[in-house]
Image (tube, rainbow, N blue to C red):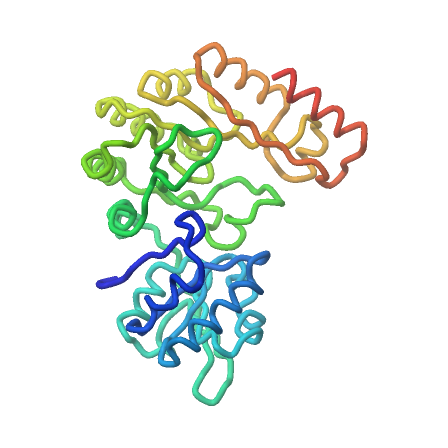
Length: 322
């Protein structure tokens, strides 16, 4: 969106008083919200509207995707919410289009009614989306970001959206991304990496935040080989079932680390949550990674359906073993 600005306040140590002066000359603000932050975000919306009553204010995120009516009813200063995949919905709002003609939008009409427009179709040609890294360069200080398993300063972005797994607990495929893994072309990703290497020479590692980058094995091998030509160290989210042959291609082309959702060491609980994984397969995958020198940041959940004190101990034992 021409003339836009991204403000990511917490990592940049910005309070409301730092942000309010920046909205006085704006005509549109879009806030990302979530269920735990919603009440705080509503207070922010009210403060923004008070600072500039002419502002149109919208919200995006999983919270408003699943509860658009409740979100709008919670605060009359929220003018609209963009449901599900919201990129082009927000762009059309910014272009000044009639709210009633924008797919994927829920809004408050002039007479106060809440109107839900038709759903917006999921985007399948992901190359239609612009690079995100120029926005990072324009508006963010990447040194302000840290997560324990990556080497800072790092860069993180998506090469695709959606996840074909059906894990019952997982937020994004059920709300925004969908269950079809829709990917950017390898060339499009590599072009962004080349741009980023010039823009951010200080970056030590790139993280691909796709729900499961390894969902498409031929593509991830092709992507790895192209990244290898650039000499970049990288990491990604993966499922604990990647075959050794693919692991080797990824390792040989700069992969340093996987983030893997093991969730539990109990097979029945894996079935209960529709993980689509076997404990023995996860063990073999982990063994292969160790032998190939690939690091793993493993994540686990306690309290899934069917959990007992005994299965918690089983998961702890599984985690220490692998």
